[in-house]
Length: 249
Image (cartoon, rainbow, N blue to C red; front, side, top):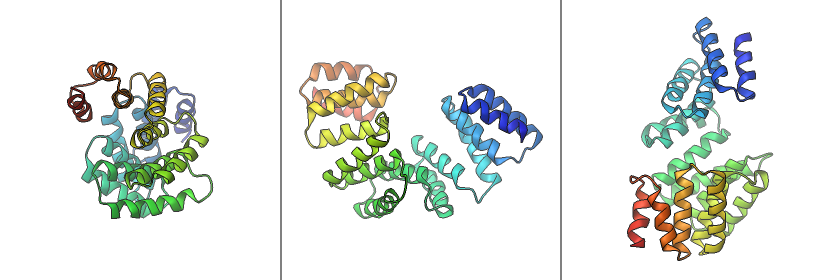
């Protein structure tokens, strides 16, 4: 436990490699230590090592089956990997254990939108998230999820209010800025979307998703050459980019 606590101290200071080393040392002493597995997984994920993070999240979930956080984290990671069926199993399990698990709801929103769930399914999820945002201290991420669902259901006024709430809590929230760009594009506020998209690329210059949003915003604003140049910098396999490229040629 003392070694684990030293790992957490290093983790909080941003020394992720040291934290992982200490978590692993703690696990050699107590192999069945779910908290150490979970924290190690989080550090691995922060270092962009999703495969190793997934293994550790799975071990944490297996060691403590009544604990919601590793299930939510694993489900979120699987959504990002496109493993939607398995992700839904883990996220549903997390919410059965803790119906207020915010990361699980955020990941479930992403899952439902990526798999193009029916309006009825989205409405049911939105009702639960609206209830949670009505309670004390909702996170910016939860407000972003609410806005995304409201936009998907065509309730643009509510979506704008929700994203404003998210960005009041965390003005630099990248997912919130991205959602505001989506709202701007949907409402044909191309100048606002373009300004936001340029700002997002400035703070996240390595993000392909940010670059794609900028390309879409440039194209929507009629700046086709600039949009095509931005698309050329994106991986060829990005389906949305390919679609935009077809539309702009």
